[in-house]
Length: 442
Image 1 (spheres, rainbow, N blue to C red):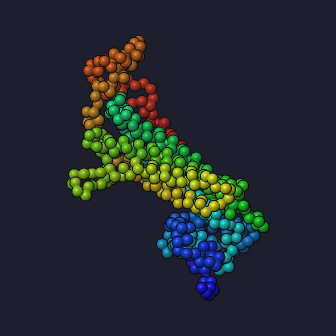
Image 2: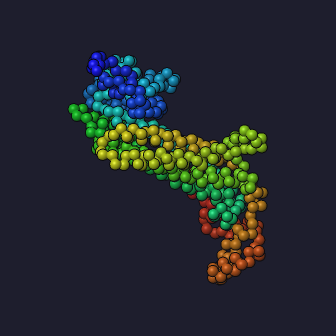
Image 3: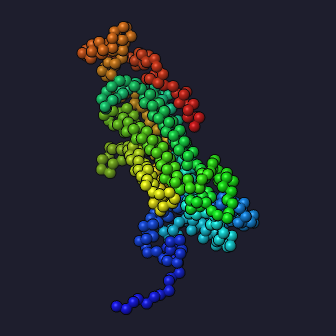
């Protein structure tokens, strides 16, 4: 068999990986790039901002002149405007947003554009963009979360005299109020928002200047000045920490989002149950329910059901972030590319979740008649036993006596039932002012 005739290599195509003269097969591009280009289209304006900060750093380091920095800055503004207008996006053929921006810069400003990658790597470049995006995205989640909290606090204030059954094991247990139900979830969500703020703070550190993970020789990069320019409150001082933190900082954020998802899961589960005809404790806002394709009478709580399900999506992304970096040696590895998509998927799902709660909760209406009719004498058995204790009877004797004479119990007037509670944070005694104070502090 004769040897194949050698042919001259083709010039690098847009699909060439890092343009080193060898075109990548389609399957290699699909395998190594995957859906990254879609996520990079979202991140592109943040990479523009990161590149603006980088140009500032290169000017301070003496690589760019002041005129070149200005020229690059003007071009970056044009690129951002083109992105806003939908004229620029990242495609699979582009490999990533960094390629698009550098190509557009070079086309606009020539030699100055060719200088822009000095002193950085895609490894720190993508983290700058991702962390700038996280700052905005987590701020939006926090705002929607505060709106949901505010709605819950309104329900806590307006509903603390509305008695209804409380349940354990989904069996009638003791009386509670609509206000206490809302206050409990408001307190949980406030805790979740505080946890999100802590996680966001951990992720809000500048990786700029770490390059591929080991810094750069020859150039004295002004890491603190660029961090300040980009709005980062601190710098990851040791450059090796940047890639070691990849996945860890993101996991902290997504773990905080999982906590919000867990709160939303149980809140939504309650409301879906309370909205059934069998309970009838609440009616849901019509605009956030959907009809059936076959049953004319149906209105389905789809928004709340999907809110209930979102925690499973968040947990799946957290699992990847927790396990993927485990066992990797120090430094960057291509495995870590997958942490970007997992983080962005989780954050965007959480954005939708908090938006949904902030929209639905203000429109919840409590059905006082159904709640009152659901009260039954057995709910007040514990109150009867503790009334006996207050009169000097031993609890175990009172417990046994009340339990054997449940038929003697009755439903007391609502005011009387609520007056029996003396401890803050119990039915009829929700501390709305404290909840509002915590909300304002956020």
